[in-house]
Length: 504
Ligand SMILES: *[C@@H]1O[C@H](CO)[C@@H](O)[C@H](O)[C@H]1NC(C)=O
Ligand SMILES: *[C@@H]1O[C@H](CO)[C@@H](O)[C@H](O)[C@H]1NC(C)=O
Ligand SMILES: *[C@@H]1O[C@H](CO)[C@@H](O)[C@H](O)[C@H]1NC(C)=O
Ligand SMILES: *[C@@H]1O[C@H](CO)[C@@H](O)[C@H](O)[C@H]1NC(C)=O
Image (cartoon, rainbow, N blue to C red):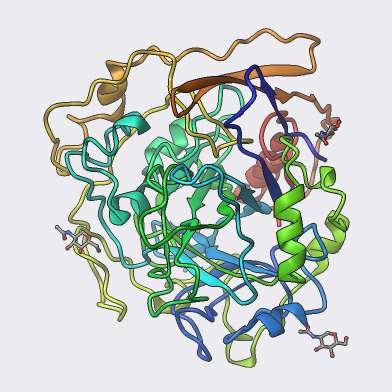
């Protein structure tokens, strides 16, 4: 069932970003291996892995390309895409894997370097690899800006001194609270995992975790010691200008995964990312290029520029069915064959990872029991000016530039510095035009892309297709929670906007 068809309608010609959205409906594995961080060994924590079945503890390009299948839609793409899984810690201490909904979407944004607008986008070379985010990070540190405050308008970031690579990497993580009944939140809007009470009250369709990779490259190294130093973010994260020394513009890779946190509504406990992080500042993601081959990927970058973002609109791509994607699995190495990672897994995270609260960085070694020293921030909903389907544009709100809160609230008083309050001043974010032209497309937002002195207006529409699912009463004898879960999964299929994806 494919429900989400973003459609960009241009009223002015230039400055718009082409992209495609790689669908990886299958999860090729959920396991504790990480060829970048722990090559040749068992990894520290469990990752949801998408892409080539050739993924292994020390995967190289050749391993990926020689894999028998890919869990992504395009058969020429045997890349590896991975990010940590999300668990729920019950109040009795038992951990349970949260259901992942629909696999992964890996966007390839073909944004130019704003400092070199006539330059080209260079395909990832064979075996190119990188990491976005920092697994050990446990705080949010951006000058003059707390995690509970809304990001200032992008055009102000440089003037505010918020464009160091460390700043940009923290802004490259997003936790999108899903409620398909209302307009979606913008992408990369909230940079931490909301606490359980907030999720219960607001995110009735779960949480979508987003992460943007750096897209400026030094042009020579396929990798670096920390898997980050060979690349850099452009100064607006998704786009903007590349820093000096990183002038080769790559496709902007952006992952989305959805987790059914809503299954645990009313259940006591907390959500924990597999690296022992409850606030989400340590979310991260990894990539190894496994396209067959580099020249093919370059052709795709050059020619697959239909603004629909649909892989079907790229004639080069050979697309396999969702069932084929879902049937592609990694061979679990024998060292991990007994490790329980799915369902109720016992009283510790895979790898015996301990929860580590901030603000100081987590230690790679398990430090033993910890107590919370940082309250989980509280945020509230804001209507999106960017949205699920098409996050990669520099945009401006139609209101006057936002007011930057003059004081820096301390992390320890999240209630007083409520996100909503911080956002209240510029709260006149335009409501999406609710009306539809023909009942099939809905205008979901208007964006303004600044390119030099030219401001282009982009009206983004989304096809809305309502799917009727006949409700049948299931009478099976299952524990209460399972029943609720089935109902939630069922309800999900009524949703018209969003991924509309089955669980993996
Ligand atoms: C690919 O399939 C062959 C034959 O079924 C099998 O021997 C091999 O192990 C598979 N390779 C991978 C990486 O799964
Ligand atoms: C902990 O609670 C969960 C949810 O109620 C339950 O499924 C699980 O069996 C419990 N674990 C233990 C060890 O009692
Ligand atoms: C983009 O794809 C749509 C179908 O989604 C097609 O109708 C349109 O002609 C394509 N545009 C270009 C420029 O190829
Ligand atoms: C915040 O996190 C960074 C990165 O992990 C770390 O270097 C810094 O010391 C932390 N700040 C505090 C106050 O612990």
